[in-house]
Length: 64
Image 1 (cartoon, rainbow, N blue to C red):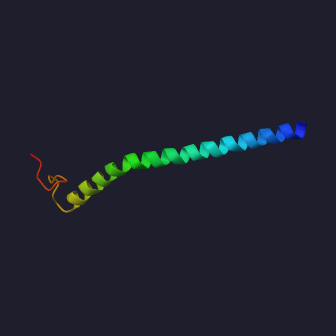
Image 2: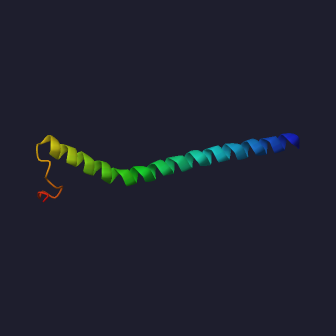
């Protein structure tokens, strides 16, 4: 009986650890999805600056 309770406790703790890790992975994926457009925009701005056109907007026009 004591061994069964210990085994159940260990299995429950392992399940909690697996759940926490899965939650972390899902959180990372959500954060990556939110940051990806921002990163792409910044990369485009850097590319334009490196090409010598700091006033160019992403749609090809010039800022006023």
